[in-house]
Every structure is written in C-alpha cells, then in structure tokens.
Image (cartoon, rainbow, N blue to C red; front, side):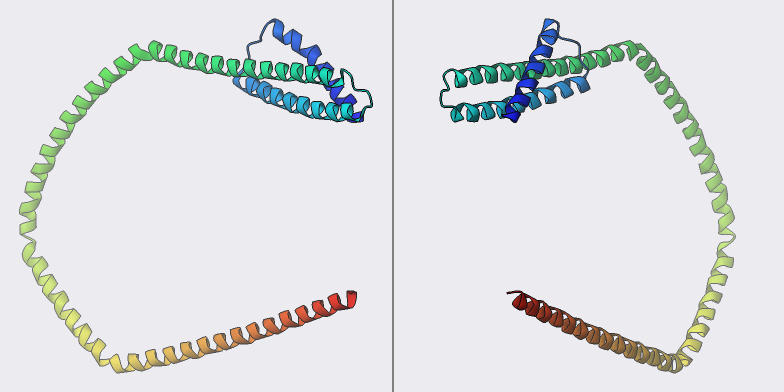
Length: 231
C-alpha cells in the first residue's frame, strides 16, 4: 500500500510537469536531450512498476470493479507521457546534430576563399623550395667532385694503415691462442661454480615445495578434523 502511494505521488508530479512542457517544446542541447530521454525511460519503468503494484492491489480486493480499468488508464497515460518525453528528446538530438552540421558547412563555405589563397601560397612556396633544392643539389655535386679528387690522394695511406691493422690483429690472435688453455680452465671453473649454485638453488626450491605441501596437508587435515568435530 505504501509503494502504491509513492508511485501515485510520482504520477501526479509527472502529470503536473508534462503539460507545461507540451505547450512549447524547448530547444535542448544534446546533453539535455540525452538526460530527458533517460528521464523518460526512468518514468516508463516507474509506470510499469506502479502498474504491477496496482494490479496486485486490485487482485487483493474483494470488490475490484473499475480498479484494473483505472490502473490501465493511469499506466497508459504515464507510458504515453514518457514516450512523448523520449520522442521530444530524440527530435532535439537530431536537430542539434543538424545544427552542428549546418554550422560546419557554413564555416567551411566562409573559409573557402582563405583556403584557396593559402593553397596558392603553398604552390608558390613549393616552387621556390624546389628551385632552392635544385641549386643545392648542383652545389653538392660540385663539392662531391672536389672531395673525390682529394680522397684519391688518401687511398694509398688508408691502404697502408689497413695492412698494419691486419698485422696487428694477427699478432693479437696469436697471443690470444697462446692464452687459450688458461682461459678454458677458468671458464670450466666458472661453469662448475655456476652448476653448483644452480644445484643448491634447485635443492632449496625442492625443500621449500615439500615444506609447503606438508603445511597444506596439515592445514587440510586440521580443517577436516574441525569440520568433523562441528558435526
């Protein structure tokens, strides 16, 4: 009964607000239209809940002449008002989107002369840059020719330097080969130490896993004993 009174109050408040809105549909923003559409959905849900409550109340009466009919009329009116809210909200959303599209079109039309002038300026600037790049390519080619002549004089010196590096590298390799047995022994010792550390780590991991299993088994047994004692 209390639920029915609350729903009836919501219904009366809704009906008191709706005619003022229907007199002249306001211009809504997209956000306001979305909020109104959500409000219409909420009101429709409230109307359904109220209708179900009134049906239950009518069925509980000994004499229910006209009760269901009145409930259906109130339900239909509330749903109609909610649908009107949602239709107006969708209309406002469409109009707002169209206004936005129209504004963008108007802005593009107003900016068209400026864009054309900017494009022409870009074309002129591109031509000027191309001419500058062509002149720069010619200058670089002249510099490259001069550099090539200079490099030819250095080829012999560079070849001699490379031969010396090869000889030095060969001596270094020979010395490296002579120390190979010592390095092999050191490497073998490092590998042995690494293997020993890995074995110790594995052993500790196995010990920890076994302890963990024992703890889990003890906990399970304790829990089972407690459950058995609780019975």
